Image (cartoon, rainbow, N blue to C red):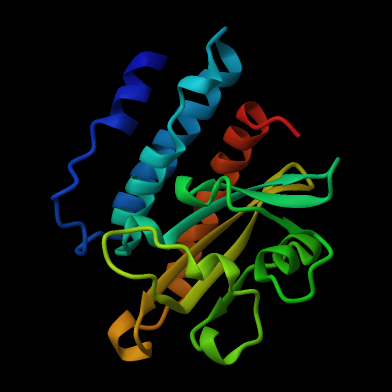
Length: 201
């Protein structure tokens, strides 16, 4: 069973247009993540086999954003910082202290509260990670973003951020809505189980 679930995460079709995704598709993804988390917990499996990059691709298609606009960060309560899980290009760039006053991910962790910001460039924020070139094109600014805590029980174990990047707000695409936020929040519970099982503190 577990190998099939890993395969479903790996065998994604990069060229497929998912811009017509509906809530039912989101629930299918939630169900798959729940099954994967349960399989990891219930079987003597190797969590290292799980590809978060493949999960990010699937999440991106489901939410009609690019893969480089999906970020998942893990929380180290021991070292009091956040570290990137995806995009993989940011894994070795550095850490975000939980005490940071300008990093949205740090605030999301501290307050355990989701946010939609559709005018992100006008908000003071840590921009060092935006300058990292993730794709063939030059680095783009985040114009709009959803940031939500990933929980395991009552503890924040990570943060998921979905963004829209571009030269300006119009080029980045439509504003995020409460429906978009709802889709992201439904992913947080199974993602919490996966992070708790696979990411060492």
